[in-house]
Image (cartoon, rainbow, N blue to C red):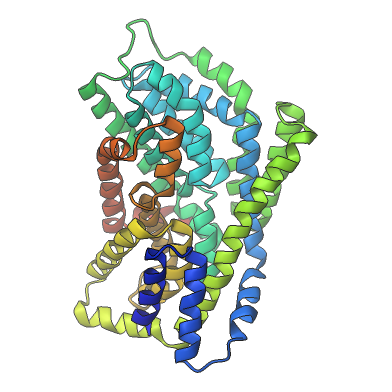
Amino acid sequence: MLWVFLFVLFGAVLIGIPVVFALGLANIVLLTLMDLPYTILPSRMISGMNSFPLLAIPFFMFVGEVMNHGGIARRLVKLADAFVGHITGGLGHVNILASMFFGGISGSAIADTAAIGGLMVPPMVQQRYTPSYSAAVTASSAVIGIIIPPSIPFILFGIVTGTSIARLFLGGIIPGVIVGLALMATTYVTSRRHGYGKVDANQRFSLKAVGVAFVEVWPALTLPLIIVGGILGGIFTATEAGAVAAVVALALGLFYYREITLRDLPRILLATVKTTAIVLFLCGMAMVSAWLLTRARVPLSLANLLTRITDSQLLILLLCNVLLFFIGFVMDLTPAVLILAPILTPVMTQIGIDPVYFGVIMCINLGIGLVTPPVGTVLYVASGVANVKMDQLVRSLLPFLGTLLIVLFVLIVFPDLVMAIPNLVR
């Protein structure tokens, strides 16, 4: 049954049918083969979208839009420049550190690419970084946006698998920092090799500059502290954290920084609604797929197949990640999480892998797919921001892609890097 589902789904995608409709077609085929009434499709789809945790998605989408329009992203870049702008490859490091700050507020890789890329690519080009290299740094660092909490993919994974979203958020903290540091190391090495971002002899780290930049942006930096601290303290859930973050971000944009007016709100809300509608439609349709495949006992059959191949937990996890990596080439992150998480998570649980750990690893793996052609959406955004051809961008991206894969492998081999904070808090 699984192979029929995947054949119909990927066959429809390859001929140009949008993923959500391809998913609907695959569901109809399954309903026909299982001799079930077609009324199950709309009823299960509606019940799948009728989920309280899903409210977190429009809230965090709204936060990202407010940050883009409210000058917060620009101030985050200024703070990052004060911290790491004096290092060889300085603006590349600023780009990555700003993405870490931004990812800790918006939870979206695409929002990160558009906001930070729009601010960082022009000055990088002015300082003789090539446009393709500038876009490559922007695209690769945007992956951090879906790892450091809050994370929209973590929310989706938690909803479709019943995994604690709060623990997923905590599991993303250490991997997000490791990815950021690894990308900065790659930037340093490649900048030295190509002669990018040479440091002026008079350029030094300045606590005064850090202090000035911090004073400007500290209210925005309270958002990740509110989100993570509130969840850890049991004050509110991840969904309620999204609502609090949205209110705080709007208040900062309207009354503190005063770079958003009431006339800007309709445009911000419309952008939020468009993105949210796409995600909810996908989520509802994926819930139907999850129910049908579970009814057909697909997860159990898949688990039995894998355990017949090998009884090594690590080898099964590696095989699963190879599959996810190649799926990331042809499918965007959101539908891939919604479709595959309900299938693979029971398999991982059956062989003793914590669903929180698997959720973090799965989202990082599929996040790497955002920067791999031909479907990588972050690639297209970065290409547009830097006005470079896709083949040039991909060539410049290869060292960073290699770094991301190495970090993923390290996280697979050393699961405590993911589970340290969730287990500590529990």
